[in-house]
Length: 170
Image 1 (cartoon, one colour):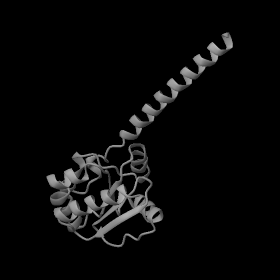
Image 2 (image 1 turned 180 degrees about the horizontal axis):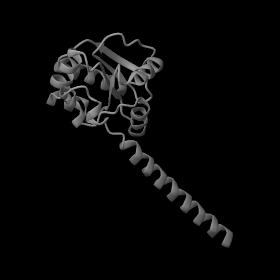
Image 3 (image 1 turned 45 degrees about the vertical axis):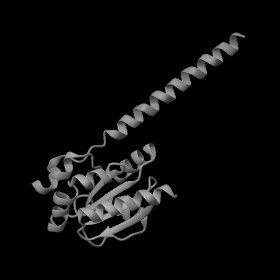
C-alpha cells in the first residue's frame, strides 16, 4: 500500500513538472519579439515593428505549432521602395491587421536576414526572386500560397482569408 502511495505521489509530481515545463517553453517562445528598431534601414519599416513580427523561421514555426496557427511571411528588402511602401501603407492597415491576427507573423529582409530567407527556400522549395512577397505557411512550414509584388490591402486580406480557408480543410 505504501509503495502505491509513493507511486501516486511520483506521478503527480511528474505531471506537475510537465505542466510547468510546457508553460515555461511557451513563455520563452512568446518572447521572440520582432528585431529591435535598429535593424531597420529607415523609419518607414518601424511601422511593422510595433506589432509582434518574428524574424526567425524556427521560432515562428515553434509558436505556430504550439498554438495551431498558420504563418504569414512578409519577405522584403528594406532598400526596396516597394517593400517599404507595403510595410508602411498596407501591413499597418486596420483591415490587414485584423486579417493577419490569426497568423503568426514573420518578416524577412533578403539582405539582413539572408539565412532566414534561405531557410524559407529550403523548407518550401520555392524561390524568392523578387520583393516584396507574401507567403502563407501552415504550422509545420508547408507552403499553402504566395503572392509576389506590391499588394494592396484588399489583396493581402484576400490572401490571408484564403490561407485560413485552406488550413480548415487540411
